[in-house]
Amino acid sequence: MDDPGPGASYARAVRLSGLRPGRSRTLLATFQQFGRPGFPIFRSDDGGRTWHQQGNVPNTGEAAGVWLQPFLYELPRAFAGLPKGAVLCAGNSLDHFSGTSIVLYASTDHGLTWQFLSTVAKGGAPVPENGHTPVWEPFLLLHRDRLICYYSDQRDPEYGQKISHQACTDLRQWGPVVTDAVGTDYSQRPGMATVAQVRHSMWIMTHAAFGCPYLPGERFGGPVGEDGAGRCAEQVEGDVLAGVGAEDHHPAGVVVFDALGGVPELPVAVAGGGHLRAVLAVWAALSAS
View 1 (cartoon, helix red, strand yellow):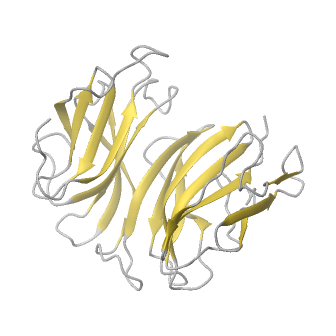
View 2 (cartoon, rainbow, N blue to C red; view 1 turned 90 degrees about the vertical axis):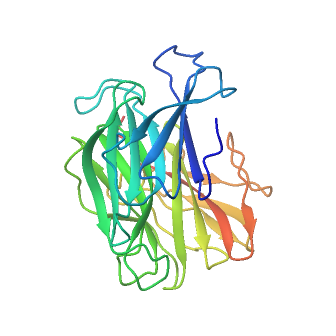
């Protein structure tokens, strides 16, 4: 592909599983850029060796203003009227720097055309400083019967920034804001969350922790905020994850990290330096099944 020009960053990609399950070499990729509205969608059918542009989010001619922080997600099963394999794209529309809006689009033709679905969250002007009220950096996850959108949230006056999520069952009406991770004082800015399932009842979240060596005692709502289930791992001596207590909620009782920062079946690493660290948190979520 050609050089996208200055301002290209925040690249995201997804491997499409629905075309050839288990052996697909088809990938979609996108990134934010300045000077062109929306997010270009590139496709590769040879495992990433070659690429061609096949679409744009929103569709070419429909976008205006500045767009940041795209996230691509393939639905692992049919959901809310969309088939298995439909591709979702969440992003942050800044309009003309007047506000921030996390918006959701869908494609049912492997990224060729896109349909607007809904606005997840709206915030103030895109000023990444404490005291302002934007929203940033969406991350999508389908869990049980809900699509969850995690994002960085500066709207709470008690925190410079925190990680929040909202969930929906129809891709259009989003539920209340749930707090997932906060700092221990106003200046700290957890953000850029990612969430993944390790095994049936174990989930892992990573996030940046700007302005603090660690965020002790954070509490997470579990993958979907189920009655506050789950408790964050505690970190000691700056860089070593020490353990996580799930009290009665985890079928195994308590998960303990070893001295090398790992848990059974889950290697754990903490990367970072200075004031920006990637903090790994592991928690056990309530599971009815």
